[in-house]
Length: 79
Image 1 (cartoon, helix red, strand yellow):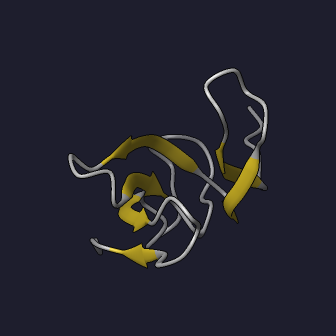
Image 2 (cartoon, rainbow, N blue to C red):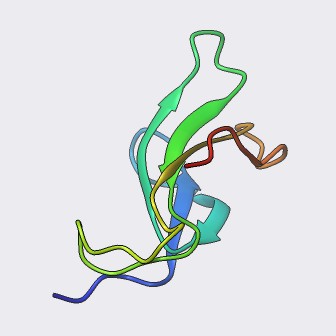
Image 3 (cartoon, one colour):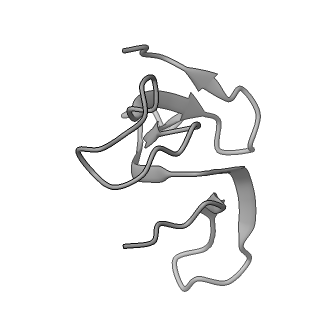
């Protein structure tokens, strides 16, 4: 199986128009707004790593956050 190496976290209007790339990388999943809508939390795997269960050392998905305007990109976990 092949996995995308260049993915993006994109913000858009509800109908899919007005798309804006907030971040680029190898993997993004499960984006969610915080309860106060000041942050978007998501899983990001910056080092890629291959098929599920066969990742390279240090390439597991980590929890990150970013502000809805694209600033403040920050890794919150490390494992």
